[in-house]
Amino acid sequence: MNFRRLFPYLVVACFAFSLTASVAAQSSEAESRQTNITLEANGSKRLETEVAVPAAVEDGRPRSVRLPGAVGGINQLLLTAIQSHLGASYHYTGTGPNSFDCSGFVWRSFQEAGFNFNRGPARSYWATFAAPPKEEQFKFGTLVFFSGLTHIGIVADEKGFYHSSRHHGVVYSPFNDYWLSRIDGFRRVPLESTETPATSAKTKAAKPATTVLAVAENNEP
Image (tube, rainbow, N blue to C red; front, side):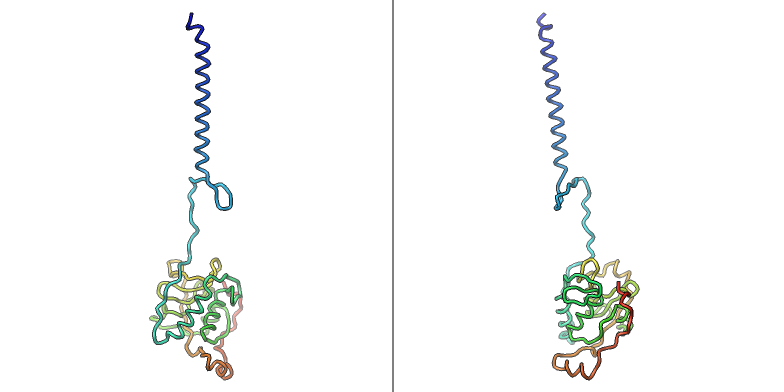
């Protein structure tokens, strides 16, 4: 008799316990889902289970270049000019001072170091200057050409080069597999193309700049 009286209460108690357990489980699951959601910098949500793949890094940090003592003065001027433009943005046909395309960066750097030759696209420098001996191909200051003469940079050393990249602007890039597989060859700007401050005016009056063959600018990458 007593059991019959207690039975309804037991049913209610079991139902209440079951409901409480279900709510607790759902709350725990919701909390679990919330902890798996983070916010990106722009406020958008990203699941932590998604693989965060970093952007491909094409360009490395500038290297410290050891300059040959015999021509260290000229090379130091060139290195100073190059490093002063690191970080500048890319702009097609740009020659500085704040943005450059690849050949414009090369031309501006050599001009600031005292070299005197006309501005032109990459392939015009290839046609104008002589190829260096093999031992000078990866020597500081050598011009390096890529991808069918559509891109140009200045060799830093055997490890890398400086150039104006479409996506990164003026940077130092290592000679990794990507770049090594695209090299067309090398050229050296002759020292005869330089002019010192003391003789600059005389040189300009008596000697024209090294002639650069006229090539359509749309050959630039």
